Amino acid sequence: MKTLPLSRAVALSLATALALAAPAAVRAEPLPTTWNLSPLFATPADWESARKALLADLPKLTALKGSLGKSAKSLRTGLDAISAANLRFERLRVYASMTQSTDNRDAANQERSNLAGQLDGEYHSAIAWLEPEIQSLGEAKVAAFLKAEPGLKKHAEHLRNSLRQARHTLSAETEGALAALGPVRSATGDVRTLLFNADTKWPELTVDGKAERLDSTKYGLLRQHPDRAVRKQVFDAFFGAIGQYENTYGVTLGNVVQDDTTMAKLRHYPSAVAMSLGAEEIPEAVYRTLVAEAHKGLPTLHRYFKLRQKMLGLPDLHYYDIYPALVTQNKAYSLDDAAALTLAATKPLGEDYQALLKTTLKAGTMHAMPAPGKSGGAYQDGVYGAPPFVFLNHQGEFESVSTFAHEWGHAMHTAIANRAQPYETAGYSLFIAEIASTANEVLLSQYMQGQAATKEEKLFQLGYALERLRGTFFRQAMFGEFELNTHDAAAKGEALNGKRMTELYCQLLKDYHGDAAGVMKIDPAYCQEWAFIPHFYRPFYVYQYATSITAALHFAEDILAAKPGARDNYLKLLASGGSVAPYQALKNAGLDMATPAPYQAVIHRMDAIMDEMEKLLAAR
Ligand SMILES: [Zn+2]
Image (cartoon, rainbow, N blue to C red; front, side):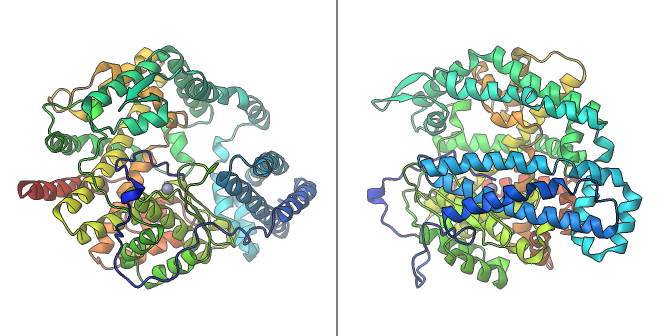
């Protein structure tokens, strides 16, 4: 998943960025900072011939239609052929998207990206018959084929998942009609994107003597401004601009919720949340337990806000006081520092993990530094049979180090799963995708806390960890609760307009931030924030950020405490790739995400961090 580092709390002047901060180990060769894509294609010309070759082979895939049920052998032949084509398609797609992200201005990159987009459409229509055909075979026949043909074993999870969806699949005619209406149904999201990104006139502000156009990127930066009056001005202007379109945002988001609710009914699901989670066999109890436990843990969140008020020296607390850093740190980390720190922090994961990380770091598959035309943010992408690729925009502050550990956590997950699984079951689900990355962040944070040389440094690290838990656990759980509330309203036949969404969101903001208890004042003007969150257009998605940090914390704490079996369980989870349904895979690793305990541990961890901070502050 893409990481978009939103907060750049610690503004670093590169001129002062000379102090090295990594352990004073003997350094090896500096890491390569641009990637070598030859494990995918040696040259762009090779990519182009591979694309043409795959296009030429697509009719062969279409010709398999109707053959899968003939015999166990023909099922295997068909699925093997589609697997092989799928891998070829993946290589082409990943290469095109990676080259594009390193220079969006390059015409050849743009053209390749367009061609990959076309190929995506053509490839998927060539195999559109596949899932319905598997479902038409039925469970008994598939079970008999699996028994008769051992070569089908690697396809068993795909077959099981396909059959599981059969009762939610409608007649071919209805599915065809829904697919044909797809562009109309998704237009709502396009309207939102255009309104937000293209048509909204973002206000102009003067901050520190400089004229600024307050779009969402600038908002993300300026909301951290140390001057409270500036923050208020920024919030007023930004949410004022969004608030003008409350009615339109209400219609677009209302449509998404309505579409989702209707689709759940049509597809025989008890609710929209059951439909979303059912796609990956996540029990609804996971979602509801997360929301319930976050709500129960609100006193801890309120404790954090009171601590924040004290540390920032404010007479009271408003919603615009959430983002400035509690402690600033003027420390700079080079890319090699980031690698050395990640290696040191992940030592508890064992020698095998360390060896694999070292080898992969040296493989030259990282594009690390900002450059003109390069996309922002960070990601990891991988193709079976090649080492994982990591894309960063290393800037030198601690957050860049944390992002380094995060993306290399994804990369190691990919490398470990690819090593252990056949291609068909190597790809892991979204529900577990953010665990390996976040676990590395937690390990790094714990390591840095242990290494802190001064009280201030320790406070910086503790404050950073605390804020990460607020943003990733509580804030995402609050978003999750908003989605439940809007979908519940729609299921009850309530008309959802912008005004109603603002009311629902306002209540949650007040609950989560302790408005009634006098912890933080929620100004009604900021209750339009729901319109700013694009993730709501992908229903019941963001809760996974909260469940991921919960699981990551669970594994990291157990591993650091050297709990018997903890490390093996965790590494086995990574190695299982997509061979086991994700909720079950976590259960196999000793973690039941439908129970309150893991969420309570997150809240306990936040309290423990605050205990430590208060002790340090008392002695400051
Ligand atoms: Zn990630």
